[in-house]
Length: 489
Ligand SMILES: *[C@@H]1O[C@H](CO)[C@@H](O)[C@H](O)[C@H]1NC(C)=O
Ligand SMILES: *[C@@H]1O[C@H](CO)[C@@H](O)[C@H](O)[C@H]1NC(C)=O
Ligand SMILES: *[C@@H]1O[C@H](CO)[C@@H](O)[C@H](O)[C@H]1NC(C)=O
Image (cartoon, rainbow, N blue to C red; front, side, top):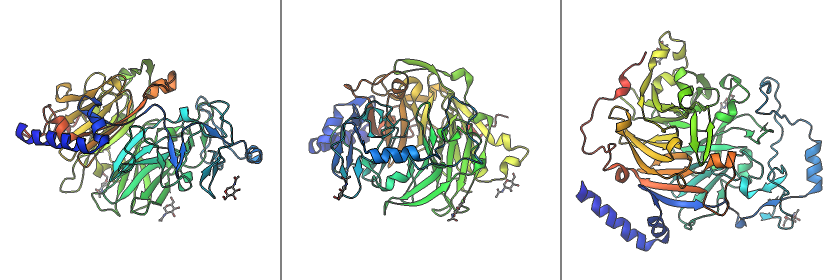
């Protein structure tokens, strides 16, 4: 094993001398993770215009037109009355493009800077741009910026890994600023094996005290070969039990093991605790629930980025094991506020009548306990059966080999840093590599970011190399029977 590993190292060093990006990365590691990119604040490259400071438009006519529009629907997240989904009318998206001239692709440089961070007419308020999702697909690294404040020019963006080699590259709107305007707010993306990029557009401008549901939440799919949107499926009223459900549609997991045309997508609903299942072939969706999708009240205390608070996020992430002979896959899931892992077969999720079965509840399993501080946002599965976790509860990335029983001593920390790995918000495994975004979100939400220091980090790592000397290694240990077959009920 050591003999196999050493040539990999020397290859990396050789590569480092050839690529300044890799050389720079060699110097910046967190445990077994290597820094790929880092930002103090985000900047954008919009058709060659570099957006690196606040911009807004003072086009008086446009402002007056906005004021005249009377059909805006407002609801406050501190107001439980909310809206009635039967009567809601969606206003025209209010995010601002008035500082941008689509005729000549120029940013209006003659406009003053925004008065403050709450100005709804601002095109770009740099401080408000907090990256959330990261996913590498081919030569592109997709980076999402959900619209949780004003002044976010583009919610779906990418970094061109062949061109953007500096430490803090400008984000490029995907597919373009103009076409991206149909997206209100995206938290995380998921590429499938069929050349498609899936996401949930929450349809929500999540401005504190003034959230606006500007369009219905929808599953959106882009064809990565043509960069065209090929699907926009609006979720049904029955998928959305409460007015605040869209705030919790923060990730999507896709299963194409029944074929590209028969894909299923699973959307965890972390706010009102359920999974929305979508069948591409049937062009239909349904909702499943289970008590294991709720948060654990014993795990609510968090201390992240110097802030102490309690959260109540339920089911946050779904990661799929390999298909069995019936093409059923184990869907591993966890609430963010929990230190346990649960599972259910995709064949249960995909069967829209299964939840009417009298023993439906027993088709879910408690997989095990990960350990103290393991509250996790996203997790993802390497084809070798190892799950990787983004642990917000202890500023770490950890692993567990699903061929071993899940218990704290079978979980290994692969990287941990309370500054540089604070709030790992996304984690994807793709082509044998793990990619992680850390963004200090609690400090942004409850205090403020210091824009003179690095706040947002993207890390990468070769999964086999990262786990080779840990309990997660798949090479030296005999395969044991999985614990997830033990039914709990
Ligand atoms: C936008 O660009 C077009 C084409 O260059 C130009 O004619 C027009 O005046 C520009 N609009 C504004 C508001 O600058
Ligand atoms: C899918 O269903 C929606 C209604 O939920 C409908 O508006 C749309 O036209 C359907 N798409 C296709 C391709 O059938
Ligand atoms: C779906 O679930 C129902 C209820 O458990 C069961 O009767 C039916 O056979 C299932 N269908 C498939 C295709 O597994």
